[in-house]
Length: 118
Image 1: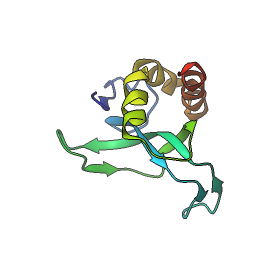
Image 2 (image 1 turned 90 degrees about the vertical axis):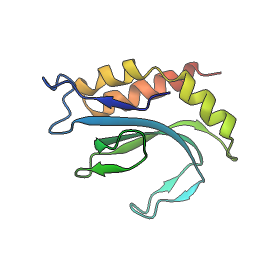
Image 3 (image 1 turned 180 degrees about the vertical axis):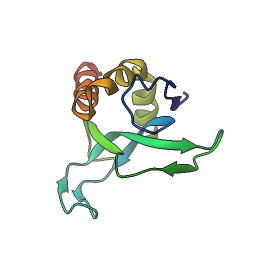
Image 4 (image 1 turned 45 degrees about the horizontal axis):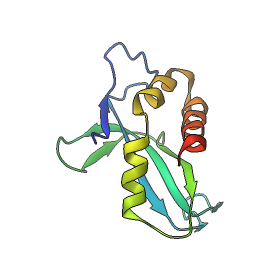
């Protein structure tokens, strides 16, 4: 599954100066976020990162503090198969289409897709 998407030159996605967006799924244990101090629920998160990404690698150059994540599925244990299932399930085109409406609209689309996930 290709997780890196080019932002159109006309910037119709409303992503500022960014050239690419990366959408990926990871597992995070519950606990305090070291960066914000917030208590976060454990589970599978969809991460949205902006910047320039090296083709064929996980190297990224991120700009600013605009990256964010949204809880997709609460869970107490990690599962590689569950991450793959979520990754295959995500409709990235619908997520990308919400960028023009802002981060909250993107998060709401992720929550909507999570609600229908089985």
